Image (tube, rainbow over all chains, first blue to last red):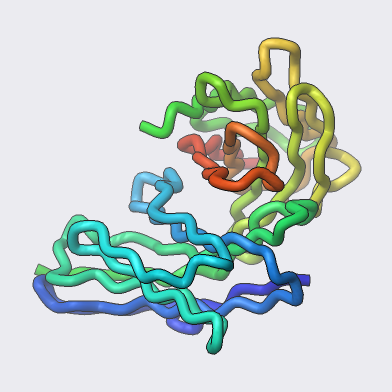
Length: 115
Length: 116
């Protein structure tokens, strides 16, 4: 079965610092999809990005960037010039091609941005 | 706003009772998923429906059941509730089932269930 590890339980940084959230996944399937979701204090889960296993191109969206490396089974998320509004719990997730197990989430990383 | 609508947003009920959570997927989405988020178990996949039929099953208890109706809305029924069922229940939707390429799963705001 697949597994996602987010080793950082909580990270606290001062506003404007860059911060990287780590995500390591395990799966035996060659076709899989990786996701990042943001859960702000209000509770909803907000979709950030989806990446296919056969597309290792890194992606940048404004202050957000993602580094996908199949060689290390990692899909890390970096926020540049962090802002207080970035404070939230961030979840990494994986789904294998068959989809029978749904999304497998990591435990999440609680990111605190201090003003 | 993801476009996925869940009701009720908050619910408090007693042990042994039965509740129904409702979900309307995004317009055009055929798949509906239910997830449970609790402090000890984290986010867990419960069940998926695709165009009215059960598509995949996760860690859903026998006391729980779900269905998807012809208009594609879905309901999650939780019965014989226990204190440990207190959690945030999410509904999510996507256009296709997970086998489809380019598929993104959008979550609703969740239904907070407290069992007392």
